[in-house]
Image (tube, rainbow, N blue to C red; front, top):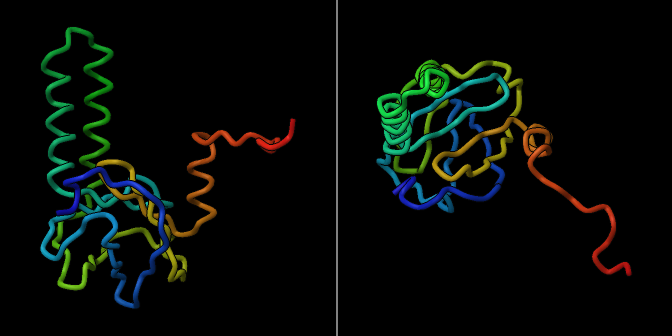
Length: 151
């Protein structure tokens, strides 16, 4: 079941002529799994297992109901509202592990057929190119310039 285990790793994929993507089996996806298609910015699309999306919403509700801090409440509220605004629709994976990307911004497609997947623990983030994925990941990755074999 999609989202039952952490969703991790990077792989390539493609968009077919009907704007469907094949969700790789390495992410634990199975036909019939329900996913939420979300887009918070034009350069990426997020695929959440609906159970993970609901868990995230409930978690933010818990934060809001348990805090005395107005700042924490407002941050949780803002995160929750941005998540609600990003949800385009929910769908089930078909028998070939595909989901339709309807309603996704045209700038995400830009005539491309190839995409990249990045597992982000509870969801998949889709990028229209490897360059976009690398730009996204750059602030989080430290690469030492010198070889580990140099003394």
